[in-house]
Length: 534
Image 1 (cartoon, rainbow, N blue to C red):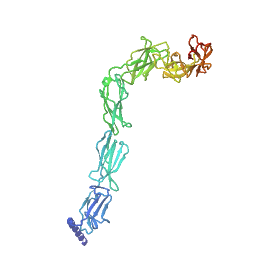
Image 2: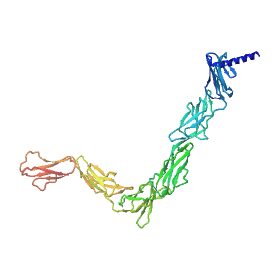
Image 3: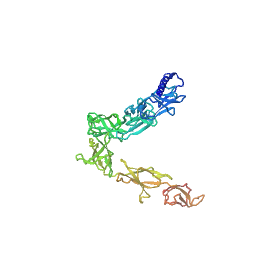
Image 4: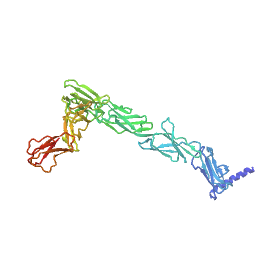
């Protein structure tokens, strides 16, 4: 009974102290660490006392005497909720009361997105929060699909926002304290990334004609490995395809207009593409046939060209007939090359075709090609018939009225010797020579080669470093009437050659043709001149 009375007296005294607490100096202070407004079950909380004396912790109706001036609550529960204060050992002075609230429910993080679509080339901001509490750090997760495993893309970030540029399923959770207490994961948020779509014509045709079959493609840039669903808008149709290709068979003018597409895939989508404007021409095009020449030289050929003006993508069929009344025969079909070579006369025409099924142009007009029986002759011309000492002469070979020739060049030493091929299959029709002789040429073209007749021979002489001089056989300084003398024609620089000689002399019509000129019994002393050839 005595002890109970003493206890009651102490409580009354403590109540009196609390009442006058605000006026007492050196009042202790109570602090909760961490100072979060909301504490959850299993978190760790410390009640710390600060003051100049030894202190105890008073929790409502319970006195706690910790070994130090703090009280650690490990793995707090709802029962740890209440008001806490710090008092001196004598309980004479106590702090204000601080309230600890422990929630038994585990909090859930909340994830919000700035937008559910990432614009092409851009990003979206995600925000994670835990309502009514503070001190959190955040983990961020992403997965590619509902069935794939989540990948952690950010761990323990103090910032509550991140910026993302990839589509996917995102969620977050908060954590705080040591050891870490984690919230429930947030609800998942689906983010789609926008990429670009474009409508392209499968064939690079600049013009589309009525009856053509074409394919438009929806090309998505940046989503090559994904499986896409497609949508199209097109003129004059209520049932456009749902695939990446839009095939239009045998188009008409009514198919002209704007075509757009868009696609969607796992967390990827496109906006509507820019319009592709299709224009279908109502007129059927006509092929045009041109001939390099209307005459095929003997043994030669002529080149024919087929074209369709203002459009592309054509392959060509080639036809020939012997006369206006005969039936045309297909020579070659579905030729990618628009040029062919023909060596037979006749009436020729062509047509173009493209697409699958094939769309054909109108046939071209006929072109008549005739053969000639005469074989052309090459012509050789020389810049000069004499090669100057130490120089050269230019020779030119040509075939009149035709082109496409290459040339063979020949030389021989004399009329009786055999011609030797100097150069063969020369594209250049001009050569330079520095050696005398008899030259001729011929032209050739095609495969197999068709050759012209040889040109006429052209003789080219080479002028050497030689000269002629008239010498008196005897070195007499004076000649007298009645003496007999001999003049000699000496050729310097041509000692190894056989020469023919010519003389000019006064008072004679029959000078000799040898190297010596003998004059018997001279009657005067003439001035002698000599002309030499050889």
